[in-house]
Length: 90
Image (tube, rainbow, N blue to C red; front, side, top):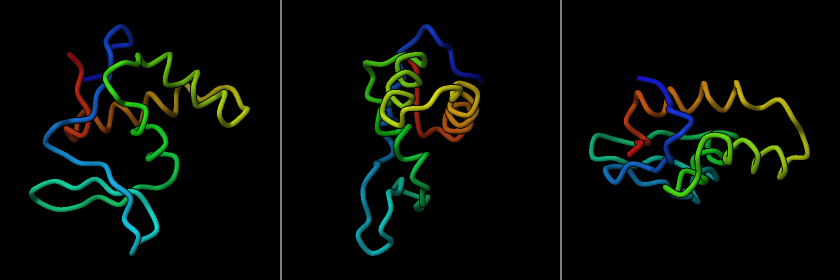
């Protein structure tokens, strides 16, 4: 299962992305537990709102951090997120 660049990406309704004050980081909460995220992962997942395609997520993050060449890293992370069920595509 890999990301389809032509389909919007949304966060899974079975999971919740939230800021955890105690850990000072974003986490994914789900019935079986919790996953702590680094800043990059959290930035990517916050853009998985069901309205953006892969290219739009990459463009938004490259603009936000004034950099280029993030496509492979973001795609690789989103493939892992898809395989873990954190995100989905229609």
